[in-house]
Length: 161
Image (tube, one colour):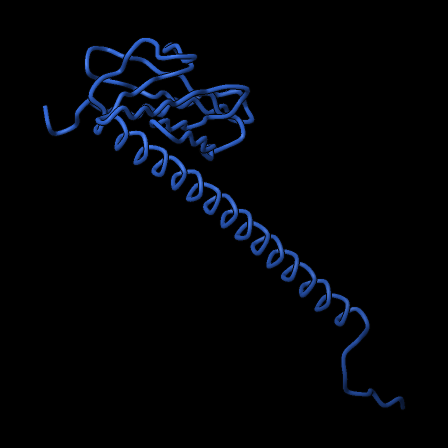
């Protein structure tokens, strides 16, 4: 008479280990998905923060402006450039050139060129003037080729008019 040992068979251990492997695989997929979602949301927040910063600077400069002349010195207003004359012989020029947006501040004795960080690397900017309303159109192209336009609208003189 043979005596049976109590314990698990090799097949039972294989089934348990396979089940644990599958459970760990699903856990890993869940972790990777959560990390991707976190990365996408942090990129979105950074993009929105840059859009808000650009909106704030642009609207403040337009609100402080007296007029938007068609040309001053070397600058000529158009779809890639907007000139804002502010009180006290002070100029603020926004210029889109070679894939970069610059804010150029000119006064009697100083010139300052400040590059403005764009929300994404696939951006383009154009300006439109309609009476006292100035629009900065920020166009972003996604990897799939879809174009999203984010208009920033401001009025010359802001609340003073």
